[in-house]
Amino acid sequence: MKRLSALVIALLVHLLTLAFVALGAWIIVREPGSTLSWIFGAASLAVGWVLRPGLGRLPADAEVLDRVSAAEVYEVADRVADRVGVRRPKKIAVRDLSVLTRYDHVGVLRVPVLVIGLPLWLALPPTQRVTLLATAYARLPAGDERVVSEALATLDSWQDGLLGSGAAPLAARRDAEDSIAVSSPMALYAMDTTYNVTGFIGRLFGRVLGGPLLLVRYALTRLARSGEVRVAARHRGLALRAVSEAELAELEALEARGGYVAPMQAAALRGESVSAIRRTVLAKFQLTADGVLPDAPQSELLGTAQSGRIDEELSAHYTRAIRGFGLIS
Image 1 (cartoon, one colour):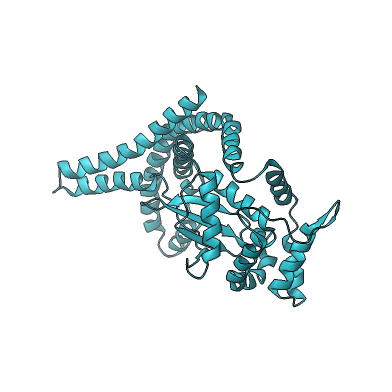
Image 2 (cartoon, helix red, strand yellow):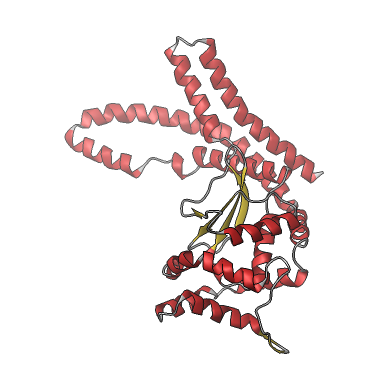
């Protein structure tokens, strides 16, 4: 019942966005020769545009890999995607200073894109690389999850615009007022009166419309949180199609523990090559309670040899990324 309620509220939020677009178009079409029609119609269309559901985009610092020069990366990504049951990524990008790996459909055409965070990727053996990809694929919002998340983003935009810090007077405007007050006090008086009246109307509109929207946002947030356990279970079930519970737990422990970036940064400062840093990383995973493994743990979806070829393909990216690892907090 809560899931259905959240979906209904989210759909109403999206309908409100569509209503602004429809209202703006109707105002302009009804009186196309009127200047006021264009002013108010354009304002309504602008509100609808700002509040539209996000289509997603690649991060500004992401670099898309060429499928020819990074063939092994695309192959393992495709195999894991097939096992999890999602669309194969059309584009794979890497980020130098982000530890997050995510998968999403972006743009109007909903192109499947995989973005790999190099710091964590460099620190993982083959098995955990597969686990990282599987968890990224599994976290793709599906159906009502995306509808609700986009509605919450729209409500956040409403809150920021009507009641947030963006609704307060700008510091730049206050500085301009101080300058005008010195040169022309009467001009400032005329401007201040107009601004105060306009500001009062805007604040009144914000309070009247913002109050109900805050209540809607609160209700939708509570309903969404009540489904987090179900969503997490779905994500875990999808990831388990490609990896085991033990492998998932190992990756979660590594992410929670952290501390894998600093040793690589220190090694880079000592002048060690990327291949030497990678060998040191893999050596830690070869140590077990029963002794030393001949190779780092590997998966049926990604063997040691292919993982090594991936490192060769990404070598230039690793070298550039390691120089900036000290910026990661």
